[in-house]
Length: 263
View 1 (tube, one colour):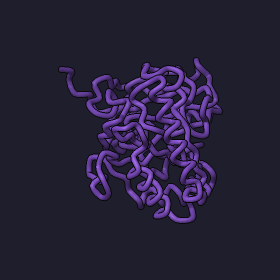
View 2 (view 1 turned 90 degrees about the horizontal axis):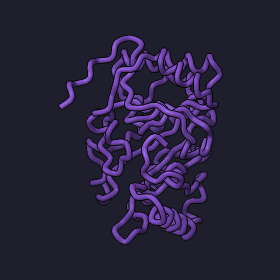
View 3 (view 1 turned 45 degrees about the vertical axis):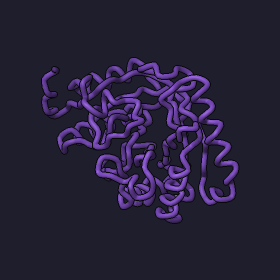
């Protein structure tokens, strides 16, 4: 068993991996992006495709931000994506290091995106973030209020802060994973939950791009069929979704590379 990871000191981050890729989701789909996967998460989503980072941190290493800047500089893409795990679930010291990294990236002309579950609003980092990509979570296998549990939940108050901050300036997108029922169709309870959450967020969310993507643990034709079925379900209910900027979209990296790592 690997020894526990030491607590990061000043200028260090817990990192599982970082690499150059094509962005797989949302507004920056297909953009050359240097992805920095920070280790550790406060949720336990059963469909998570980065459990090595989110659940037990078995691949985490302490990396100085100077080394990360050097690696981004060698690749020199337009975008750098902070993902996880949950990049905003950090100690105060590590959050300060994350802010230093993002500030340095902005000073070098890069655009910074952060992938978050939306449970943590860190206004001190907002000036360094070009795009907040927020994916609220719940357990799609359960019905109704049972979908909300301490291990997998969203925070409505924090989501409202995001919609009233980055959302008002066009720097926010919301993403929802729609899990799959046994027969292969999108779970109606997931779609109902998205709709209820968007209504609860109020008028501020109406101009925010909303991305619906199917659970995607399997590659190939099965994944494409999940996208077709999700698209068909939204088309059948088009009028019910017309108040929001809804997009049904796959994870592009999964279309191209299936379950391959570092893609």
